[in-house]
Structures are given as C-alpha cells and as structure tokens.
Image (tube, rainbow, N blue to C red; front, side, top):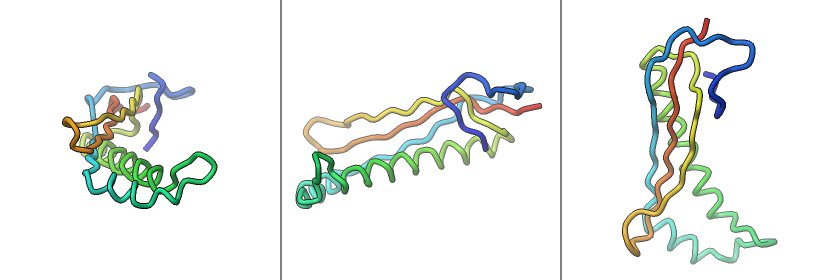
Length: 106
C-alpha cells in the first residue's frame, strides 16, 4: 500500500476515490507516569521512552488506517495527515490520529 502526504502519486493516475480513511490510538495516563518515572532515559535532551510510546501510537494509527483502506479495495492513501493531541483536562491522555483519502490506481 502506497501512503503519501501529497495529493497525488508521481507517475500514477488515480482511477477512483474510495473515501476518507482514518486511524486513532489513545495513550493512557499510565504511559505518562511510566515516562516520568523513567526520566533517566533522557540523553542529549531526548526522551527515548516517550519517543517510543509516540512512535508505537503512530504505527497503531497508521495500521488501522491501512486496514480500513484495504477493506475499501484501495491501492494507496493520499493526502495523509498525522496529528497528536491531548485529551481531557489533567488526565494525561494523548491521542494520535491519522487520516487520508483511499484511492485505486490505474
């Protein structure tokens, strides 16, 4: 499956648009408590454990989006947008969401 943030795929023609597809991952409060408990992972200004949690959330959201596109018979997803956001007030939850347009290619 081709996934791109651009509205088209160079050298390929979109044959049909199958619809908007998305995926989400919610990262719970315990993730952030664990992160702060393991702050010793911070090396050179980077928090390795926090980055791994965000990467896993992104990968989960992308996989959900790909599976939805496959159910629609798509060959690719164009115009992909990735977003991170906090949920609730002082609850320590974060959401990773991704969306795009599922298409078939000629």
